[in-house]
Length: 472
Image (tube, rainbow, N blue to C red):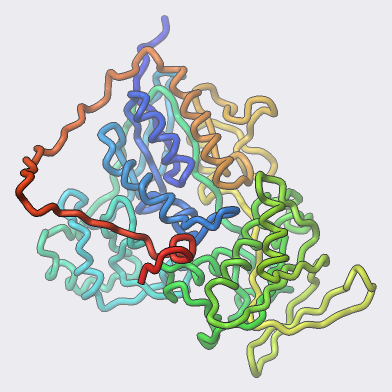
């Protein structure tokens, strides 16, 4: 006899794919638990400055979805957590979740930030890729959802300053790990990916030469909310780089690393970064992209590449860069390469080198797969069938986004909506049974004789609006 079905879904991963799946399901009338390993949702997209091929502000696209997910009555956020066990069958699963301590009471924290202001300890800011410091008590990024601070107990010296200044009394130094049991009818996996760490590729000098950065580090340099306020500078001396080199396929299409696959987005994000660098810099910046093959396969992608070359002067050089050298006096980088057109060895000097790093499976992928009883492919991504790209090896568990293989934001969002529909089909009979009723604030009477209160707010974080309207 089949067991009763439960009208709730667990979405594992709070990036753009996980958020989209959660919102779709919540609007359909299902209870959603949105779980993420990080202390806030947003994923890698929250670290981006712009998106290709439109150069739209990433935060302007993501922020409304963050707010909606955080406020939706049918969505419960479970951050700083991970899945540790699963029992049951499609329609009726029991999931065990470990929630790591924040040392802050989420019910009391107002997100004022006074604790972080007064904290005397400095630590590396992982969100900004180590390009700036943060305090031992911190919030992941300024627009974080949920806006709840967290104490890094490995860095905390226990001085008690944060507890003294917290007017809400939210600090809990003896906070403990908790284990939750969630009953759901289906599960969607959207834990995303992690960028390759290029330290093992010693030929590029990453970690030894200060002006060799990864693409995600360069994204934070360009970002208006980043450590340099969107000002294009190089790490070694804070000067504006006049010549920037982008090296493609770092950690992709590389048999030595066991990564023979293409990461699919690196060509386009390097073109985007070259274009944005040209727009951000106060001086004329020369951008050169060293590539094996330019794979501009999506809608509008090739036109974007042509525009970068013709309008922005981005130079494309077909070659595989064998090694990067540093001038120890200036910290400039020297690239020697084979010109495939002439057959000659050439040498060029650059102020900054950006490594276009590929996609790897997300942190904790193996533990997640083991806990849920699903299979991974030979590269560590979620295994799916060729004609069923949203289905995992275990019925009732679906996948979307980069966890099943490298893909860009539009593809991830499309898969998220597909996975949400798949999950909903299993528990369709339970639709609307676990949802919360919306509560609206009391209406204020507007009198025609009163002075109207009108606010006009214009985003000034990018060049799209700023190129037409004077936002200053």
